[in-house]
Length: 163
Image 1: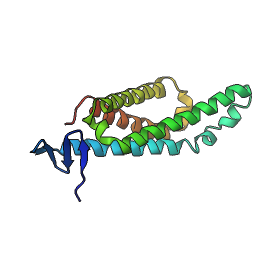
Image 2 (image 1 turned 90 degrees about the horizontal axis):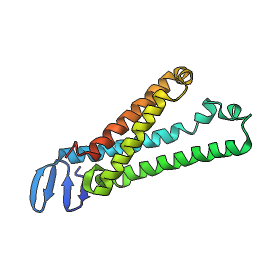
Image 3 (image 1 turned 45 degrees about the vertical axis):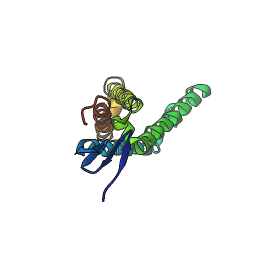
Image 4 (image 1 turned 90 degrees about the vertical axis):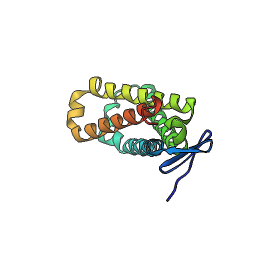
């Protein structure tokens, strides 16, 4: 099966890139595009994990004593974060060549997402309640591992580690 991607004035097929009539080995670009699709799948997985998470964390019970307006802010923020995750996934699936480095905007967005997820790793490790993380050690490790994958993929795309 041959896949074709349009990268500005560059067309790629698995294993070959054509730049203005000349062909070059292009496994790296194809690999980066597939890695970004994988990052899109990771985003979808994080979105899916947010469905049962409020129950697992007993959010309703723990927010019971908080003023109603603060609870509303909390839930709205949670929903907005899930929407942003959906947008990140859509970028990965719909604009992988651009995120892989075909455009300056794509590289900027990849850099932004690498920084976004790097900050999230720092918060997960150093800010969140250690006891809660310990109680959910398997999920915590899976989540941090997923975030590391996102940082590596988007960092490589943003800084041109794969061309």
